Image (spheres, rainbow, N blue to C red):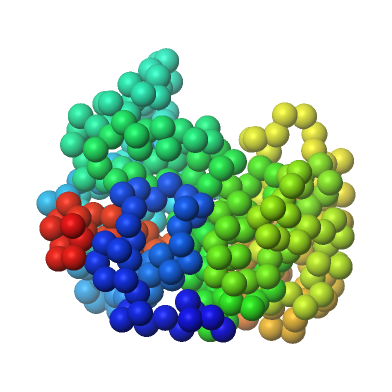
Length: 331
Ligand code: ASP
């Protein structure tokens, strides 16, 4: 176990040095201790959210958060909305279907419009990789990436790391196998960066057509045979086929895909006996994961991932608005 996993708050740099970024655009560019800091901050929100009666803290009272979603979302949008409201902020949701981008407005004009609203933080999901970075350059407030194309989904990776850390007691030294559409998955990309930064040994499994060229540069081990990759795995993370990002057919059929890359009881038995099953959702039951595995609460952490999503997003909104709120040490 490295000092990162055992780090207590007094080992993190103080104030803004603990998270010296204006925006949260991706896991790329984050230092391991910055990731560990966010995870540690999120713990208090897990406790608050579980506390029943008073699920509320007013530290973001008077702040306005815009959730600008140019691509569909259920979990991420809802959890960012709940996160903002649990911290007392005014939260406004903007859906692509209602926005002027559908009428031909450019991304930069959209950014200028969002900026003119004088929000205190903007959460953005966009189907183009890099769009969130571009908008962040044009607005004054912190921007949080809620998923951009095939690029990154940093809060998903943070919530996944928090789920693993809480279930397994650590991330460092674990074997995490990520299986499915690695090529199009921003979840896979952010998780490869995050989990390797925290010291996990990451294996990625996909049919050749869905494996990015040069994936080993992420410090992960690529496999084409799922059974082989599962041996000794502590965590098995399944991914959805990102059909909306595919042009043409990347797999022979969903049935054939499940036969080779689906997680069922026989396959799960090849991993460690206590291996944890994860999926970022939305799940395609019977395509990447068998229903009885997804619903097995002993093995599956899928609903816990959703719960950790709220806590992690509360931590991110809190941390990124500290400077604007004049919190001591966040100059
Ligand atoms: N919800 C995740 C994302 O937005 C995973 C998925 O859609 O498959 O990337």
